[in-house]
Image (tube, rainbow, N blue to C red; front, side):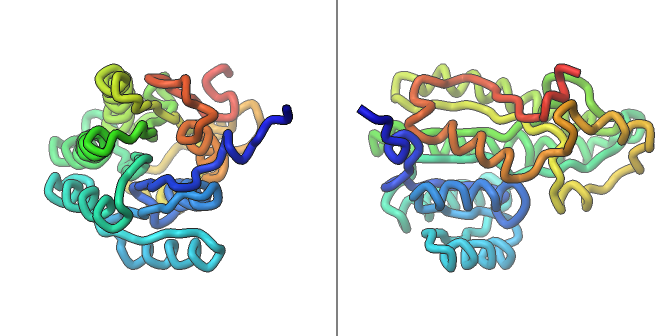
Length: 260
């Protein structure tokens, strides 16, 4: 019998939240999930841009809606997840993508900067995961949760991202421990660790300039920087039936950077 790829990688009937979905990797992830048949909630602090991206997905034949969320605020995350469930009638997929990459060297890193990065990049994913797990458990949904971390959580990559890399390392711990707690419910939790991926947010990230000799080290062995679609494809695998026997894992998608 021939393999049914539609069954293996299809998401018909699934409801997904993608945070930080207005642009960049989040938008690409939302498009991939919608293309596979999922109904997608694009959650972002920039509601206007999220609405435009959702409209673009609908124009391409997908089912998408935009939701405002501030990942650093508990009430905002709780409200967003509850609204998505009410609007779509359930929730089966969460992709924790929202994040910031403000840079600063160790000696200049303030408590305010540290707390801002950890609030969005670590506490935010925890809050969304917690609320999504409640919904999935209550509905008996064997859901899929994917957290976007960073290959900098595995190995130092770049001076000036100490706070960012620390938060992303926390995301790996969150992933593994949540996977253990949710395994009995049939809910899988995995992480994708992007390497140097070109996005508008990357260019806007505030901080000290990156030295030319450091930039030269950021092109991986495969010969190019990553694209949002590279990351979205990995996420798609982890939320489809194809990955049913995978949980608590960290998938590095970095063009071979960490092996060089």
